[in-house]
Image (tube, rainbow, N blue to C red; front, top):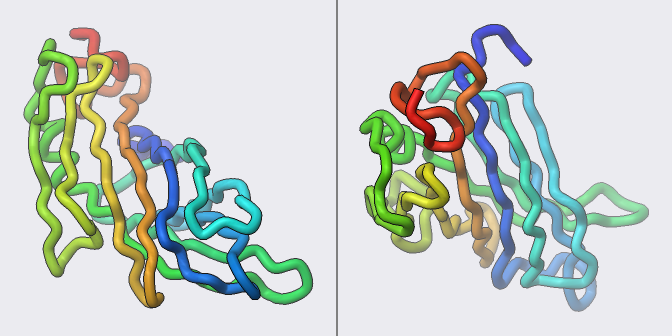
Amino acid sequence: MEKNTLGLLRIRVRRGHNLAVRDTLSSDPYVVVTMGNQKLKTRVVKNNCNPEWNDELTLSVTSFDTPITLTVYDKDTFTVDDKMGDADIDLKPYIECLKMGLKNLPEGCVVKRVQPTKQNCLSDESPCVWHDGKIVQDMSLRLRNVECGEVFVQIEWINLPGSNLFAGTDQFGVTN
């Protein structure tokens, strides 16, 4: 881990919906998440344009300005994998919620609702919610550069031990 790491971002890649067909009748999709020089990927789901991944990927965050891109591919055996669209994850609204330094909210309390705009890849309202003593954000991302498809993810910030970037709580929501 780099010494200037601010913290970790856990991305739960939950599922895809109405992904593009890239093989004869279906696709074998997987997701690659990139941030700077980090590149993480989910497992491949065979023959499914509505895959359930439920994979957790964790990125080391060194800057909130470094873009996070999610790209869906179709796994091919004998040829290069086909691209099935991409989307950016906009961290800024979520970081604004973390900076509020909230504590002890009721389970399920919505801290902020982020609306889809031309500047983000959201396909629906994206709530930042208090869950298990921390804030998480659920996103439905409309894929670009493809005829159809959405990917559903959840993001969650993890403070590093000794870090008080978002002062007041540790990764479990416990007051420092």
